[in-house]
Length: 186
Image 1 (cartoon, rainbow, N blue to C red):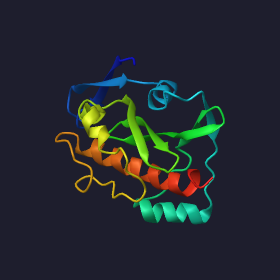
Image 2: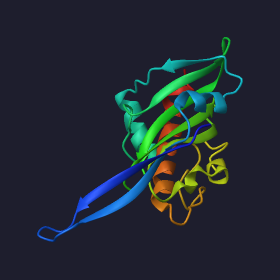
Image 3: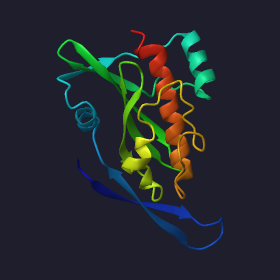
Image 4: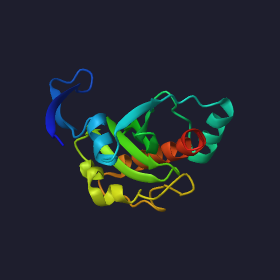
């Protein structure tokens, strides 16, 4: 794993007519590439085959209804984790907004559509990075489209990271439902 903090300086003009500027620092951290996360989440895989995600209009409607929000089919990238000819599971990447910035993450699912791993690939916010902590991510293990996958229900919140927790959980729920509709039924 690599950790590369990248300083980002945000400059915002103060109210119109007021002299001066407000300067705020935020830090982005690239923790894993998609390829590194694939290897970490499926250590026994000998290859990863891209899976085209083409959902029908009916699947998109079901996804929106079951996941509690609109579908994001263009944002996901999916791979089938293989060990020779055997399918080990699926690996899906996505990005959600934390409070202001994107959080890139990956979800591993077994062949039954149950979550077997969640990794934060890139985190750009100045607060809320605790979503990368293993105990918080471990709450998703074994859950599927049949689970609530909601902060305050079966996923705990982290004080100071409420938006990151909520948005990541919502994104993971959408992936779990999409996997049930489009990946595990292959």
